[in-house]
Image (cartoon, rainbow, N blue to C red; front, side, top):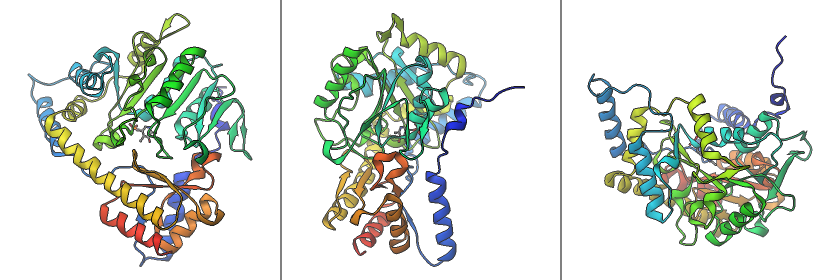
Length: 404
Ligand SMILES: *Cc1c(COP(=O)(O)O)cnc(C)c1O
């Protein structure tokens, strides 16, 4: 009889967003008169910008005419999009990345979950704690994480790099030597950013020990500070130790359209093998390309009109982040993030656990956030609020929290 991949059985089950949903449903069921404000889930709310909608419309029309119809897209992405990415996201920032080093995909979640499969099963994985759960769970499924300790909330074979207030939520180099290092900056969930000097230390370290950094830059559009790099390739030597993952979700509202990309430099090798060639092989075998109309929409992100409209959207969310950050700080909360990120990370007051504070906020302020402990043991005692709501709701939510 067939046997299942029993690594899946080791997964403790992701109760975070389902538990939040259940608690909110129960509360609103018993308090139908309350207006609940949701600042929990990391999803955008503004509609797609006009430049993107117009690119979608014309691409749809092209698909309806025999002369311009397109079938399968090239596995690695259309040249028009790969060129636009290389030009605007990289060369414009002084990073020598070529269009053929860019692998277009349907999002950074898939890429961050799939990328591990081109590495050996005995690779040691290092992650930040707290962490975006995909990095850990995809390695659990592959059989790389060892066993779960349900008391500690950790996996025996994973190297955890604590991100705490003491290190400003940027990890120290680990004592044990990892092979794969997942870094995400600006960070989800903490909202922390890394300076170019600090990231350079990581690049130097990875080059020295032969590790590969998987750099998730999904939130780069929210960077406001000058010393914070938008790409890891701003650091010297990163092309020989780093793969960068990007998404159109948070900068352009593509969470429902789906588009992202991975950058795998051609010179990046381990054991004499090109990782670019491996990822190309993997992509060609398991992926048939992002939709033409969505890639045209992605191209519009880099048009003059698209850039201007998206700058306004980011400014809107940034204003929310600013309001939350300042409002909670004035109210005496210990807050971080928010400056280069749509996420505000706050310390729960009076020693409350993350879930106690969740319940308190829901019941006393009718505000929904995300318990930090859902992102790993290092998130206990913290809480995440997002800037992705409407400005009016954000103001009302913060004012309610301040009145507690
Ligand atoms: C939202 C997010 C992504 C983007 O995911 P998509 O699949 O592109 O929508 C990637 N990484 C992190 C850490 C995120 O929060």
